[in-house]
Image (cartoon, rainbow, N blue to C red; front, side, top):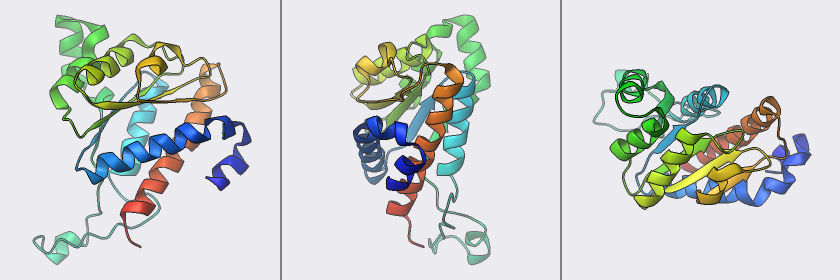
Length: 197
């Protein structure tokens, strides 16, 4: 955290919410849950990026020790933290958007995938992306916790998420520039806490 705030001092106002988000993610993984991430455009790309850091080694090798898997296979695997990027589900997204409702597409995926121990992360620079908002609303109705990552104003999403990280910028690209070091920090810390060297 100290390094993050030294490099990005303007994130100091988000420190307590970043710590709360870290605790939520850690609790999710310790209880056997997974992350479900959603966003649009650049935020959809951020969802993919986060999944990439969690599903394989980020800063560590994450050696697999499960002896049920033969050593020659085990040596080519890495420990994984389950995470699904909802924007990557192109077939169901296009089908549901066409047949039912574009606004409800992430909500449908949350409804279909989420279990009580899971966590939904919604990324929206404005905090008002309707499809992200509906996903977090459905999660809330299902008793599933959520994290919102937004810009300074927070929007509607920050009012209903369990934890909201509102970075101190309003322009889309500047908000995205601050989201990246936050989720890198979260991924690195989770990895440090859950995997040995």
